[in-house]
Length: 268
Image (cartoon, rainbow, N blue to C red):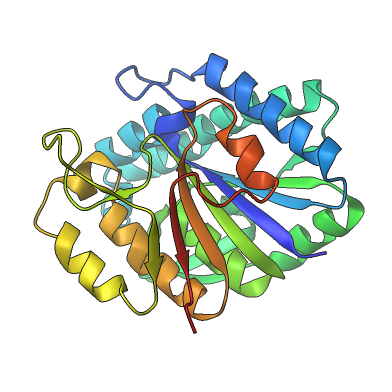
């Protein structure tokens, strides 16, 4: 069986306006939906990746971890970023395990290294072994060692893209706090239209339409996200961007429902 990667955005599982505050209610609901999906589809192999939200981002920005090691003061910030992300991951994994799910945290800073802010290696053999054992590997956006600049940020989206190209993955689901990709900012334009499907044929036009608007800010970098997943779509991997804040959407998506948000695929 092929694997499905589910990315849970930090804006979904944390309260971004409160420092280091997990959204326990949403985490519990999503965990139950994952449990239900695996019961209904026992052959499903699932990889979870989550963002940092109000946990990692504030510490990382405070110490400019993304800019590389320039002062000894940043070393503490580097280690602190890793630790607070471990706390968020612990909350999610503990909830999954409370439902009897074999979730296992795989700390990215321990199995990854970057060079100039780009992935040099993620030790995917560990992820594959966990999947073969029947575990649910859980990774997250993290501060990692960097061969050129000492340290840098490895985003959850980059982890997803790397794993999808190095594992037998057919589908990637991005659980966000918006309904999908819009043609303009839905928070300021009531006439904004949800784009139901983006193909490798019309993706350039779509990017032109949403660039220059505030859509990328509202959705946590939707323009960048689409660019990152384009190579996946070109390889035949199906990507869907859905609103994980909506009850039942994670469950339905894991079971194969494809009209929940924006679908990105290779039309050829």
